[in-house]
Length: 66
Image 1 (cartoon, rainbow, N blue to C red):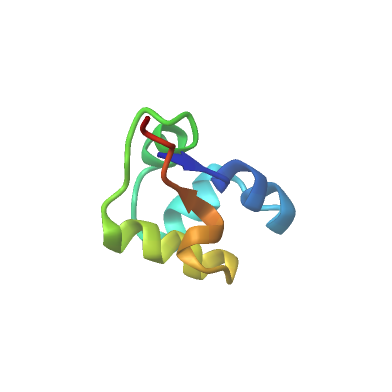
Image 2 (tube, rainbow, N blue to C red; image 1 turned 90 degrees about the horizontal axis):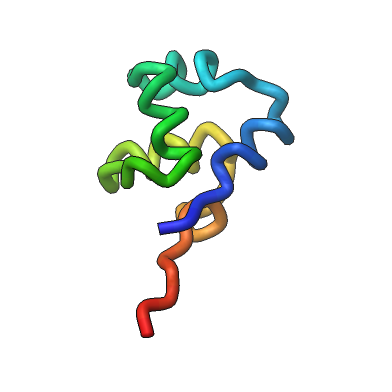
């Protein structure tokens, strides 16, 4: 799964730590999501999208599986 978390965070001008605090996870979790080492749960993905005021599909995208 691809994501735009880093880009959206930069647009909103918040740190990984600030985003993590807003959604109740560790900064390391945000780092892992941004570097595609961790795929968030549906609830966590929805919380992240809500912080950015975006639809889920605007932040997280399925990669094509050919």
